[in-house]
Amino acid sequence: MRTPIIAGNWKLNKSPKETQEFVDAIAGKLPAASKVETVIAAPAVDLPALVAFAKNSELKTAAENCYFEDEGAFTGETSPKVLSEMGVDYVVIGHSERRGYFHETDEDINKKAKAIFRNNMTPIICCGETLEQREAGEAEGWIAGQIKAALDGLSAEQVASLVIAYEPIWAIGTGKTATADQAEEMCAHIRKTVASLYNEATAANVRIQYGGSVKPANVKEIMSKEDIDGGLIGGAALVPESFLELANYQD
Ligand code: 13P
Image (cartoon, rainbow, N blue to C red):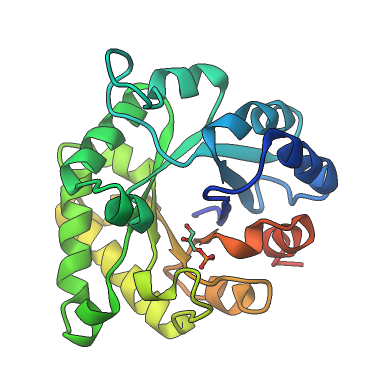
């Protein structure tokens, strides 16, 4: 039985002060973690305020990126060892914005996944195709390639515990949501890919999120699909009331 996972990705938004205002607004209003797991991925500077709140609430926390080395001469990077020590639960890796703007490669993402597990946290691994790839009928092959590369060398047990976020690039921040059927089709394809790389039990356990213009108005339909276990949400997760509606979509 896969627990649904609703995660906000704040991207480069909010200060520590705004983070405190956000958590004050959602305090006591999140669903039980056994029913729906709720996560906020925030900029590194906002994580202390988020982690402090998470200690006494149902919220889990995520970094939006980390490096694959724990320490050393890597100016400007964030250590997975330090994130773990701070009490962060998840790290988002391979977001299309990081792949696109910061040239993160499949190999980097694989190294980061291993570093995150080495430090006892859980990766949320993003994948997604461009509109051109979809229109050329290349989306399935592209996504399978991203998944295979990201998971390379991970154990079945690790893969069963992690989260994959399918985020078609053409649906991110565009207001153009994939239809629930399109999202389901690709999430089912990702689960099949995991089954072919590992086994059916691993594929049955891995949680797969859809991301791309998810909002309170469409979350229920998206979450009703068999292979969609959650959402990774940008814009609609920035406002407390909207995040709470998403988190409490079952009510
Ligand atoms: P939007 O929900 O703003 O489309 O962003 C999706 C996303 O990139 C989440 O990681």
